[in-house]
Image (cartoon, rainbow, N blue to C red; front, side, top):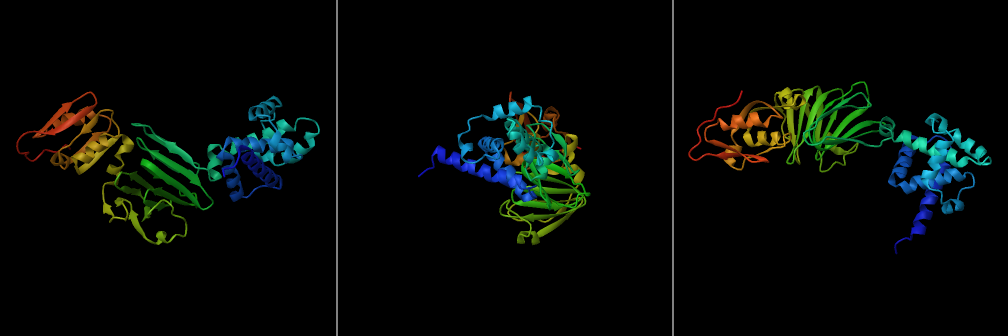
Length: 362
């Protein structure tokens, strides 16, 4: 039997009452604070229920279930009474003030201010991350951003990418949900810096590395310092997990691919691998199909190469990631290659006859 709306409302009111008593008893520890914020973020109904309980203190309980004052009115009253300037450091003593002011008829506004300020502050970027609330950064197609993080690290996010960042007492944790990111990790923070991207995990402190989450693999390139790369069947890695013992050390100038297992690190030109920071595509003897796929991450006109022989053609050189016309002009100079344009595509076709050895762009 499904619970009725009244039963759900009663249950939420009871939870709000418990949280109000918990908060009034003294400062919450980190774990309890994170749980409280998570409960508030679950639904606006939770926020409204907590406001109603706080507004009725100390006569909370059954009466809270019948209060019909909407959240907007509570906040409006708080603004009218000019109490929204209170800081979080003032919020705790305010609990006693609510009880005192209740007899004077404006506890509703005081309670609204207390909860509103606490929620607004906890949900701010720095404090939200401090309480373990993830902050998500994303880029649109063709967009790149540089984002300083609260711990002093710097996040470089490539086109069409998304990461989530959260902090705990022991870790700084980043989830690469899609795309590519380069991390300049602040070494002043003693907490471990961990990145999770699908089946790949990276642990680093005070280093600089790139994580590229491709459809078929995750590629990790270390520019400076050293990282430990591990593979896991899911992103459910936790400190103390035995998977942490099965790691591969990757040093500066090395790159490794991860699928369901960790590949062998290989030496590469690390700065070429992160040429996207300067809006370039830099390849050495890479298949043309992969180069074209990289171009397709940035430009509005897509390269289409269906012939397997052409896709396997090795290409070397440095290309402007946003200059598809120049790359198309280069392809048109190759023997045995025909380039055709449509309004939305650049078709790269194999010309009739045997292809000769192709020149490379340098």
